[in-house]
Image (cartoon, rainbow, N blue to C red; front, side, top):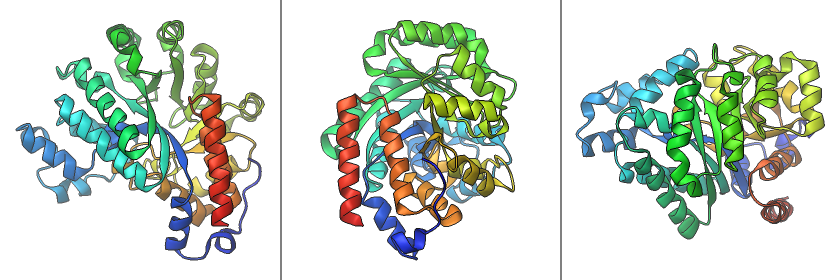
Length: 355
């Protein structure tokens, strides 16, 4: 952590391919990834054809779909995101979706990932929760066996559907807790403060589940305070609006509370529109526990290494700072302490070899 460095070219070579080779050499973890947000247009159309669901798509061709990825804000993105989810109908669909992400993550040398999924997006369409979880879990098992990627699953509540619907979803998920590590809170943030979900998160804690929440992406810094104080979260997802509150930054630094920051997502959704580079530089100049993630990479133009590349190109991070951010992700994960230590040692060895 600490100040941003500005010698990327000297440390990693001046061209993009050199930087990407350096990034690919480093093992990494991803902690903020929505599996539905990895649905590439090609797979979307393939699943729509398989399920005779072409009429459910908002666009009729790949070209139209790609052109539609011009979002004005979080809600305009979510409208397209939920429409694309309509092609996901069987456990095989969720397996194929998850395996496609894991194979792409392998190319970025991701060795551990903590995957969000939105059960309500599917159950309200009549897709059984069992189908969703078992399809994803089957891919997780294969991903560990064939790709060497460990993963855990985080059930996210759609905040705009309210706390009663969230509690119902948590109750329905109890038979599958062996496949679920934690709960989260996502979807449209403005007007849906974290505090109204306090009872749901208290129950999740009693069930032994980890707790995270989207806060301070488009919503104010106050939402981050609420997530900490009322939901007892162990990570803040996004959290970039903490810059609006110096006392909040000091509290987050003191507690070493991780933030799962998603640069390309913030860029595409126009968070801090016009001054994202400045704000991201401010964020990385604090002593906050920042982790870098891709959020919804199929929609936002880049998987994990592309997010690091953007930071290097726009903020001039040097190689040591990049490695520090990688280490933050392992330390902030829900892995065991022994696994965290092993991954950090492997990261250090890879960096030494690449230097």
